[in-house]
Length: 213
Image 1 (cartoon, rainbow, N blue to C red):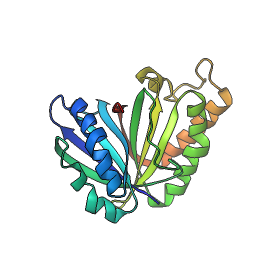
Image 2: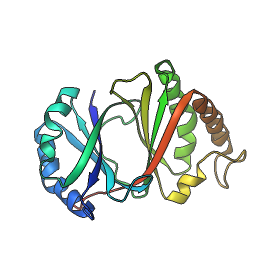
Image 3: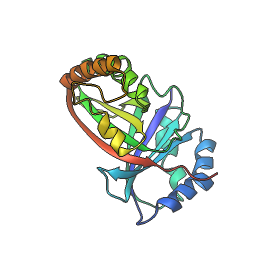
């Protein structure tokens, strides 16, 4: 099973185009040569500063992250960064990079380790079917491999726009116009239970930077 590198970083001012080119022209190749693969580069939109973002890559195991992750970024103009090592849950099925336009919500959850299986089921069978019927895409749900008393999970979801992200907050008792009412109610029920077992959560919105090839 792959281990994902989730690198939160601050870059040089105005450096997103240059970083995207460096990844496409140099870092992708260096990553592949080291046995990994680039997954996504995200720039912050809401909840991050304009010079903050995330680089995600997949590696064959945790040792490869430690050995190759930093070394393959020598050409990148990154001011500072920190890494969270993640293992995938029910998605993604493989490390195929996302490519759709829109906004990508990165939502972190903290919960008791004993609730992790239920959390996955509530997400996959309860919440996600409605979201994807309404034009969203679940990119993945990962669990942090970093030590700590709580299970820490990351959910990345792609939305067509910020307005669409707001539409899917499941606040109203009635489904939005044109939405599947049955799936909406199932999602609301699952989301309420998921909130009950979530100790804390935080979300930020990003945009996907896809270098020209």
